[in-house]
Image 1 (cartoon, rainbow, N blue to C red):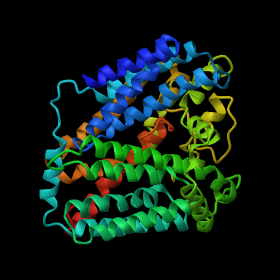
Image 2 (cartoon, rainbow, N blue to C red; image 1 turned 45 degrees about the vertical axis):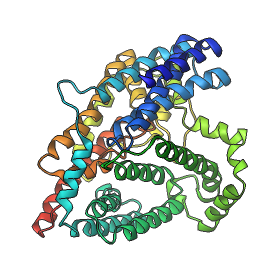
Image 3 (cartoon, rainbow, N blue to C red; image 1 turned 60 degrees about the vertical axis):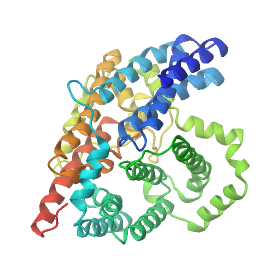
Length: 442
């Protein structure tokens, strides 16, 4: 009830106090409810779905609403046109994501306790996963063009090893945590890609705080969320300058510079006021404005580019066909989507994308609302299905971060998220079978 009241107060302030339109006020208030729900569920349950909902609401609703108030000329289409699609699209996505028709509430804390019992006498699994993860990062570093099945996906085992050793109460768990942080930091410096650092730290924190005998206090959770936002501000502050000095025009022209990274971090930490400048706030703010991409697509489609007519559904088939057998298989990422469906500038270094909700529009127009419902339903179904399977294999829930790491933000597309879910699940199935042959039980 408190969450609803707080949301209504924010809506009233936006609508009456700030003179926003009705859709803008709703778009500004809904993310507040999602945020309060997310914070409330931290440590009570594995708040993955709540996190996905909040990030989506922030990127698709709240930040565009504020942009329409402060910088309306920067948005590609009028506010009423944008929110006529964005509001119902997010609402249906949220409905598909969170509603559990005919299903009882899942006790996440009990599932974690079952996992702890299953790992009580299994110290080897975490160490094996650590070695697989290190090997995966080695392949990613030495052979950037290697197939994801032997590079990116195995590297995720590095983070899953933290959960295995932590819940197995391994005497090496703190050493492994430190090693994983060092490896992740080194890779971040080399590639200049900060999203993996932020999202994996957040995912591990969400898991490691669940299953406690007493949930975290509101003060502790507030400190956690505040720290996450501070880290995000710090990342956004150094990212552009670091990439400008270490990136070329293509992905192959990237290089790392630990000294430069150290200088930038030291500069920001010794003078925190640089994190709070209007220019920095503006760049950070606009970086998460998914309304720019969706709005630009709505301005271009179908006026200048016809609806794709369901091409997005082919994304459900692509992961089943190996690139070895299909050399022309579409690449994941935002480059092609941004080039085709928007008028925004792009390059091979583009890390933005239309979002699955934006893909729904460019394929089906306002019929994409049903696509948004289906996409949310897909994520929600996979999440709950893992818990059902975990009744027979409790440690399966520890693989949820790996399954969902590609689905946490709307800066993606269906091909990326579905491919990530499917390929990670297939890798997990193969890994279970292989290690079982060596008497290693995951």
